[in-house]
Image (tube, rainbow, N blue to C red; front, side, top):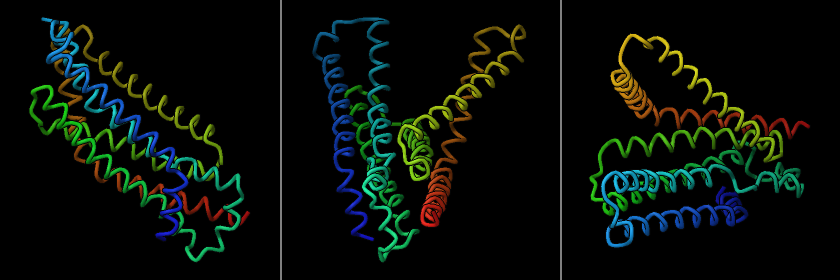
Length: 250
């Protein structure tokens, strides 16, 4: 088992290093912007312009680099496709580790990277909170866990789909279609919600109601996020085992 974990990490090292370096460079860019707002050219801005840059830079660089890191670690660095192309998968069934163990290795690595990314994400929030003279509150942790939850859902689905279709393009297309369907379903739901109150209440009241509703939704998702992540990883693992078993039969 340890040998397979080392093998996966070694073969995917370039993809993981690129993802980590990209996130760190993004964080460094955010630090430069925050420093410029303290003692550089951006410090000369005043009023609404300064407030807008302050808000966008704080929330953007507090969470986007970690979302990028989560996405970089969501796959297996192309190891599954490389194994298929090199015909290594044809001989993997002779290993002392069975199919369940081989699938388990992929999800052990996912869990390791997700926990590591979560720790880096928390440190990143602390960094930008300090540079922005803001305090860490529970909402920051909620956003971080919700981002991690959505990435875990994607990551859990990527592995069995890659094993099945043996093509990263096919997986990307299906994931994009799934995201578009979910997005437009949410937009239609919002449009229906707005339609119920259109003309009955003023715009400010409607916006306040919408923010309250989204806050309650985020609170519920936050509470369920650990369960959702565990269930998603479990389902992804089971589907990966079944796909590997089908390959063995074929």
